[in-house]
Length: 297
Image (tube, rainbow, N blue to C red):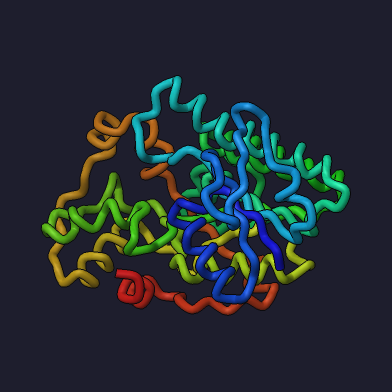
């Protein structure tokens, strides 16, 4: 297939681009600078510009672009950037698809398990409604913009991704230096569930979705084995052959240091299962956390 990818320079986007090309697919990356090679095309969401010629004839679009959630403290200005980079960017892209003489067969758009809000100990799948909080609202707005492409006959899929595990960066990449010094510790109560997925499974699942026309709407990209934060901490320490701190980092300390991001991004519980992927025949390469960590570190 000829596939357009936004956010191709990010952790997931770069891994997906490698996987697509390894599978023989033609990939064109939408970039915000003047194209430097034949596999790049220009778009600038802030100016509502996208290269329609590059989009014309593509069979699929994978939209991953968005400002990083955890890289900065959430000031009012940065929260507006988080919204704009996702909602406005998706609006520009979908509007561009509507101008094509032959829109793509499928639009796959990023989202997150934050859609569900804090689920506590409850196991949830794609039938669960939207939760509460800034990130839940953000995911809802993001997904709503992507679904507008259905009006142009485009199959729309929203990737509700959990904690993506990669030794190349992302959340795990930020944890590794701390854990390698033996300073890893549970966060808050440690009882909150973290739904994770190894990056190679994330790529494999996305390829499965692109090829499978029955995959429509929200799809949870998480392993079938969510774990508590305390278990994640122990398992990561074991994988690195390092001890971990016996005393957890208090929630109030995390909130004082990281603000609203800690309360919404680190301390809520997401016990999410990939029901659609499992029912759709996807076979995970990594279903246990210890095996997944050993593979990616």
